[in-house]
View 1 (spheres, helix red, strand yellow):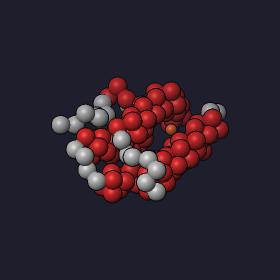
View 2: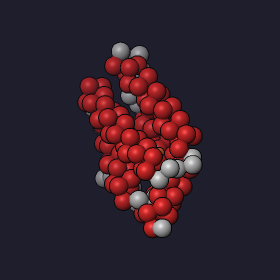
View 3: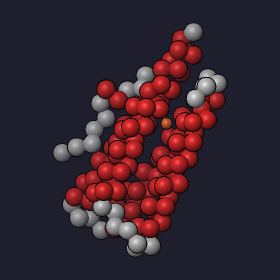
Length: 135
Ligand SMILES: [Fe+2]
């Protein structure tokens, strides 16, 4: 059963961005399941690596939308992306080196961050892009 599920309340009003968010939620759900089922660190790390790769590509997409619409909040939004990438890379390294177990708390950190970021940063971006392309 899926626990981490994207739904319409998370829509930012931009189909490309929503599609990416759905894929990220899917990977988060896979990660949570792997942790709950006690999968090996190698399996968990594989999912985390895929999540990091997709997140990086997703941020690049959002940043290209920001450029296209000359988004006023671009700098702060990009800064938050940069901060998260640095944090997850650090987590990834620690897990790879055996200094950290990829536990439920790592999952919770990533999930909490994404849900909050969508609400606070991506929804205003989605709205601005909608306005831009409608006008
Ligand atoms: Fe974002």
